Length: 122
Image 1 (tube, rainbow, N blue to C red):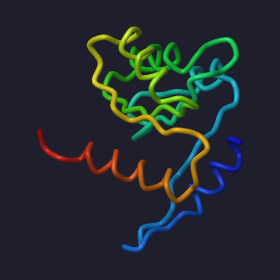
Image 2: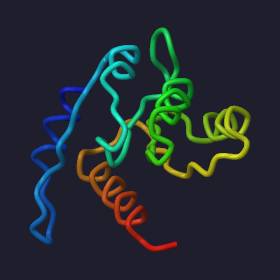
Image 3: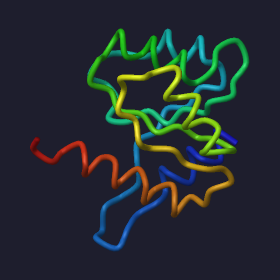
Image 4: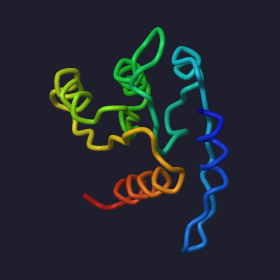
């Protein structure tokens, strides 16, 4: 699945002529964490259910490395995981959940919206 998302997002242009995204993929959360560097990524797209470490824990550890990193969680059930997120991160303002299955076009739209939101002045 990760390779399909990578290929689709790298090749996904939009109506305004913007090209696709630069995408790194990791199937192992430990490997993702060891390769994560501050100021390298604009947005993390994390599956919540993974072996060894769930997406919430991976995000928590990545935030220790780069406190400005944004995240969008992939989930099979937005309601359940939104409640779990509130329990895990009571003071964190994460609003981006993408419910699987999702098309590449819809996922690209969500990512662009998150990146535009990030660039808006406070």
